[in-house]
Length: 347
Image (cartoon, rainbow, N blue to C red; front, side, top):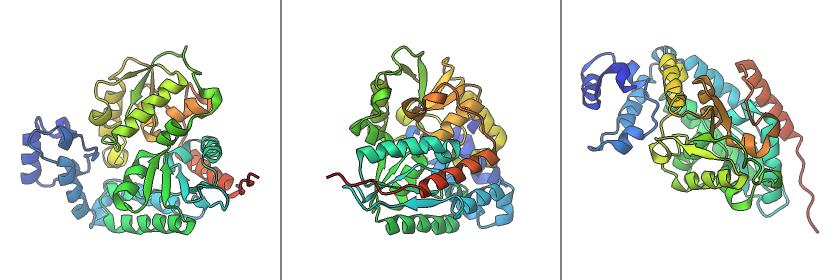
């Protein structure tokens, strides 16, 4: 992003403050947090650009230039009855918990969502499930007024379930709930699996597998405990992996952050390719479905950690899916959740 506009952080800041228009620059920021983390003088470009987006977002005509119609379409459908649902269970010790798979995972594989939740129910009897969006796409383009509407809807749905703890498979959902609903306890699915265990057939199942590269998603760059839990899962299933040079809290965005594929598609593709080429491994595994897809778009074979733990039939390659198929998958996922029934109580 830096080199798309200038040659140094100082000149970028000077350019942003003095040149008009600056909208292209603001909407080319993925808000990944790396610049503020490594800046020796504590300049937070992400915050600067993020606040600018909020101002620009008041002009909906301007937002259309940066793909806002696509964001609106996604959000309206994500919160519609056709693609969202929840299921609360009355029996078990964990009725106060809800699993939230997130938009990307539901769009990718309804079966994977089912398999993960079935395992969670065996570990945490009584846990419910909610297929809902966290509203991040709207927030990322600066429309905070609409984000508050969507986020309030999510909170209302969770309150109706009596869910005081949410288990997320998506890093954007994790951080959105953590930052905007601090009264709700947030737990990563990968921490739950690290603590309570994976399916028995996945334990040490890949000790003869070729080495993969592990990509950390940028939203959770400061969640050190999550980084450790993910790596312990790699060890549990015996999957050999290597680290990117920039990993954990120094990880680089996959190219899909900040809705960049809509706001600056060419830059998004360039970043996807750049990140994918930072490893010689053909297979790049992440614990974020959007990141996995980005690595495939960048020229490598992007996979989700859950593919290895639960989805043996496609653990070597994800099937490329278009927009229509992704929405159909979310519909199928919603239908499968609606069919769930209370788990019989143990006597």
